[in-house]
Image 1 (cartoon, rainbow, N blue to C red):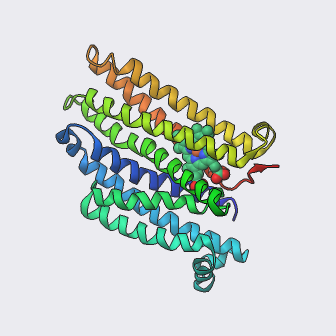
Image 2: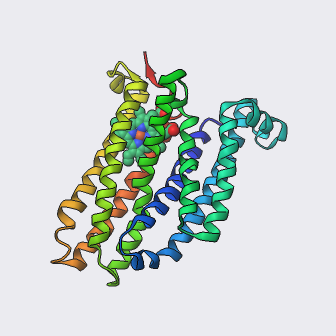
Length: 290
Ligand code: HEM
């Protein structure tokens, strides 16, 4: 039962981030005509992300009910599921996530990449901060930790989810139908803000959940966080190569540089998925507080 929780957390994180960042960067992309041309494919991806967010939320609710009753059949038992929804903090947050998920599916089907979808994706992603370790504290420090975790999730979603429309725009550019440079320049500015927010909020999280810091090396929680940091460092390295090496070489050798860019974006997306796997595992391990 416990093994299903990190898997479902990953589904909830990945789908909500794809919806938020996928919609967000498309709406902020320069060159409206080129951006609009990716809409049919992006719309399908956003619908898929919204459906997955809703199904992932339903599945995690079932697993929480099963874990509470220590019996798999409780996952579909209306009384136990009703108890979880009404008598636990997780359940009260989850009612909103289910409503938001259902609205997001309807909005993505009807509107595709649209401000209304983005408006639903923000609370869908941010509410995940209200059920993890960040939600353990009380009073002002507790509120601060929850707000910090919302910033962490939204900034991470902006970066990872934004890679989806970026990859679609670069693919289109490779087919010779649009310039890649303005899109990359915009993503690079957008990504820099997101990375700075991720690093700042990630450090706050680390100080709140690892005390003393030697727990980074001596506890399973700290070790998983170190693995996550190594993956994040590799993602930042790839983003720097894109910005400092591939972007300047675009005008001289557009075809070859765009092909390399596509490969490096694919690697960045895989590394991002692994970072989310590490974050999902952290959510189920005991924080390293002595
Ligand atoms: C691409 C970069 C990153 C992504 C996608 C990411 C993603 C996430 C996600 C999805 C969570 C779970 C939030 C929740 O449970 O509500 C999380 C938590 C966390 N992150 Fe990150 N993160 C990134 C970078 C970082 C960095 C650079 C640090 C440290 C400096 C960091 C430290 C943490 C810590 C300590 C937690 C708390 C985990 C827990 O609840 O036990 N993250 N991150």
